[in-house]
Structures are given as structure tokens and as C-alpha cells.
Image 1 (tube, rainbow, N blue to C red):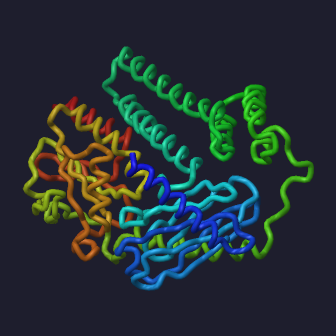
Image 2 (cartoon, one colour):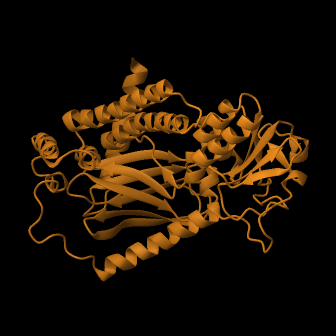
Image 3 (cartoon, rainbow, N blue to C red):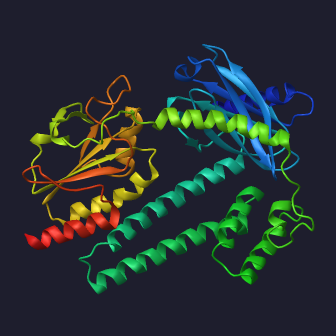
Length: 408
């Protein structure tokens, strides 16, 4: 009990400390503790947001090499969404929802070196509620992707299709329930606005008006919530030139970060055709040569954790393997530069039973001979390692394999 009281007192002291250091005209403080993988890079960090059509850089600070802690300051008259950008290493977008007089604390580590980062933080109920709901929704959306992939199988019976459609309807109702809970109970106007926005795309005007009026009972003066049914007479003012310059500056940094993390090695040669001769390292640290793989059919699929079409295709690959009843061997070859992220994605997407290889060596360079220019890209090989098809995905992949299975 004494230990808990001490921790609570320390939290209050830290919060008071941040408040006391708040510069004049600011009412938000964000304290970031950096691990060595982040602090080893000298770089700028930016706190930015949109206010209607206007792009604002609320604060920026320079991290010196070895610096373990930084604090960013901002101002908002009401709850607002913010983003934090690390120019070289760290989150490209750390999403936060902040209220006036917020004092936020969180750690930034190598695991946050991603494009989009949503994580719980000390001092922000709204951010933490958003993260919790995103996790719930993400699990349901993943289930929906799996069901849509299964629904695409050409060998399904009518009863199986009805069963899957019923499960999809249930998943959609679960998503609606999460949004309704926010509208009815959330103390965050930003999270309520997000729920209303998603409903605005799927319900009729009368139903949306009812939901908005319910939300306005808790947040009567919130402009964004009111805007669903009470449009400003003159609309929003156009974006200023200063705003355009600020946004261009930030998005140039974002584009450079993204391009650096996802770009594939450029070569003059055409896309790899002699895939059988290539040797890769597996997620278990073993060398695997494609020519030594055995199976009636072998799917060689190039992908990456940052490639949305690749991830959308994963449920279809799992259905393909299931549909072929042991006659299809799946080999997934990752283009991720970060091997830790690659291995985390294997577990997240539940593809650890496939052969998982990496096309990137320990130096972050593409293995010689892999001339893949775009992903997703795949090869379907027969048992003699002859190419049966290339670059077929999702429903087209299932249809091709179904056609081949019928010939067996």
C-alpha cells in the first residue's frame, strides 16, 4: 500500500514539474524518454496538427546524440488530435489526442520506428481510449478479411457461403457496437467525432442526426460534432500560403522517411525469373534454397509488413493452402529491412506455419539476384519447379489453384 502511495505521489510530482516548466502561451507538455536506438541519431522532432484547413507546427526540438529526453509544448483551447514526427529514426506519426492542460509522458524505443504508431501514454484518457478501441476493431477487421478470403473460394457450397455471410454480419454488428459505445459513453469529443464520422458513411441522414444530437448533449459546443448537421454558413476559410509551406516541409520529411524504409533496390535487370537458384535466410536462421523445396505446387510470395496489398492478400494465401489439402507449399519472402518487424508480422498474421524467408541481409541490403521492383509479387511453381503462373493474387490465385486441383 505504501508503495502504491509513493508511486502516486511521484506521478503527481512529475506532472506538477511539467506544468511548472510550461512556456507562456502553452497548455500542453509532451515528455518523451528516448532509448539508445533513438538517441544515437541527431535529428529534429516536430509536433504538428491540422486546425480546420490550417496546418500548424506547434513545436520542434533538436535531439543531440546521446540525449535521452525531450519535451514538446503546444496550445489548444479544446481537445485536439496531434502528431509527432521524428525526422530520421523513431515514429513517423505518433498519434495523440490532447486536451488543455495535458502533461503527457511516454517512452520511445526501436519498436516505435514505424510509419504509424498508436500507443498508450501517461496523461491522456482520450489517446488511451482510442488505442483500446483500435485494438478491438483491428481484431474484428482481421476476422473480416479472413472471412472475405474464405468467401472467395470457388469450391464453396451454398451452405458454406451462408455461414460465412452470417459471420460477416456479426462482425459488422460488433464494429457498430464499439462505435455506439463511444457515442453513448466516451468523455472524448474527438473519439465521439470519429465514431460519428464512420456512421455518417453508412446510415441515413435522419439516423445520423439522432446520433449527433445525442453526442451534443455531452459536448454542446464542440464545432466538429455540430458540423455533421449544422454546416457553417460560409464554409471554412481557404488554406493560407504559410500553412501550405509548413505542410510541404513536414510531408517532405515524411515522404523521405517512408521512401527510405520501403524502397526496393533498383536494378536495370527485369524482375527475377530464375527464382529457383536463390538462397535466403529463414526466420529460424537457416539457409533455404528455393530449388530444394518440394511440393505438388509451390507458391513463392514476395511481401513486406508495410505493404498494405501484401497484407490484404495474406488471408487468401492461407485459404489457398487450406483449399489444396497439402498439395501447396507456401514460401513467404519478406522485403522488410527490419528483421524484428518482419518476425513480429509473421506472428501477427499467423503465418508461422509457412516457410518464412527474408530477401534482406544483415546490412539491410537486398540479396543479390532478387530484382523485385514492386510487391506483392509471386511465382506459382509446379513440382518440377516450372513457373505455372506469376503475379496472381487474392481471388485470382484461388481460382487458378482450383483449376489446377480439378486437373489432378
